[in-house]
Image (cartoon, rainbow, N blue to C red; front, top):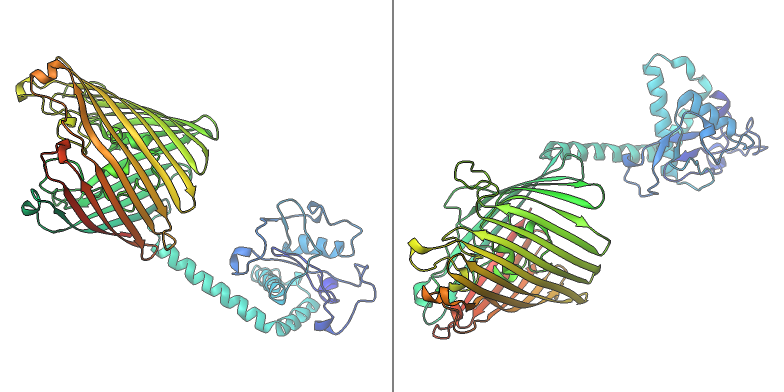
Amino acid sequence: MNQFFGNLLLAPTFCFGVTSVVSFSAITGSIPANAESANSSVGIGFAIAQSNLEVSLESDSMAQITSVSQLSDVQPSDWAFQALQSLVERYGIIVGYEDGTFRGDRAMTRYEFAAGLNAALNRINELITSGNRNLVSQEDWETLRKLQTEFATELNALRGRIDTLEVRTQQLEANRFSPTTKLEGEVIFAISDVFGNEVGDRNNTVFQQRARLYFETSFTGKDRLRTRLDFGNFERFDLPTYEGRLAFASNTDGVVELGDLEYRFPIGERLTVFLEANNAGLHDFTNVINPYFRSSGSGAISRFGRRNPIYRIPNANAGLGARLKLSDAVRFDFGYLAGEADNPTSGRGLFNGDYGAIGQLTFNPSDRFALGLTYIHSYASAGEGLDTGTGSTAARLNQLGPQEIERPVVANSYGIQANYRVTDNIAIGGWVGYTAARAIGFGDAQIWNYALTIAFPDLAKEGNLGGIIIGMEPKLTNTSSGLRAIGQFEDPDTSLHIESFYRYQVTDNIAITPGIIWITNPNHNNNNDDFVIGTIRTTFEF
């Protein structure tokens, strides 16, 4: 190496995101007599990993080389060929780009030179430590000493940056929850009240909360195991109907419960498989086409406003499904959930009890428009009915006369959901849901619901969201004579659900959402006085 360091007149050729050959006369005070000669002009190659410095250069990946012949843009006729060859073979401090190039004709900074010099010093120290001191000549040492003096400021700055990065890395490793698992959380505090002639006196202002912890684990980088823990103390308002129920209302009776337990993994490029073990819903298999309002913590303040109620129909929570990508714009999702999949002695198990099966075609021709066509088939045992947690009492079909004559309910439900982002700050969407139900032994019934949604993302500030929802929660619209004979009549009138909210994003992790829900003719009966639910939801995410 003395033939290179001892006659150093040109600055090194770096492979550090950028590469270069530059004049070194400012350092040595001399200029080579013949810059084309490898014997009288010397190129020094240094390498240092880009991740060790907070320097933004190029993103090209580097690769260690064992022979200069691996560099496609370095030829034996090049003036620095012998210098590079010696550095590769003797010191191993040359790297190239992934495409097999060296790119030795680019400019560099003094900091980049210092980075390369630091790498060379480290390598020589390694040789000395390992007992190979003879490989380093006295001339090399003299040249390096001069360079260290000239670049003392840059070397100190470089080492300071490396020390800082090492400290940060140690802190990250010390505070990392797990190498495979990410911990996330959401906490909601809500102050709520209900106002109305009939219900106002029966209800008081409440302060309630819900907390969720998510453990997101990946074993391959493409799969996901989700485990969620829930705690909530929400008590429902005393109302004559399920209409207006808050989206984030959850009551775990003072204990922490296991919520979602799901594992999803891809098979090839087009198929994703889902295994749902607890607290699942048919919506977990597909896209509900309501991007701005579907989250209970940051979307609509009502349960109805989050998605078409038909997704909530089956009294089932464990099973499996898949998403199949038919093209870039079309996807087919399907799934099956059972109500007592884990119980081998009840006579039910995975296939003999309550269940729900879904199939949905989703069309997404652009990032502004999405359309979903949904079919759901469900079976509910006697007394369970079609409880979606929304809509009128009659639409639930779970009180079919006296308990001793209750019958299972089989249903076929159909939904159309759409959303169109008109501009970056306005999106219009909505859905229509229809259920054809049959109470076995009694007769048939029809249930309808619909909604129009208008979203105003980034309203007044990036991250904010304004929302308006107008619709009809599930309504029993028609019953056969057999159902009427046991007192199950259709809802007499129409109730409207009118909702408005504004989410203000205080920080990336804190949002405050005041909102109101107005229910006209509650329980689809104009004999009932309207009521209004007001809430202020504060959401913390971490």
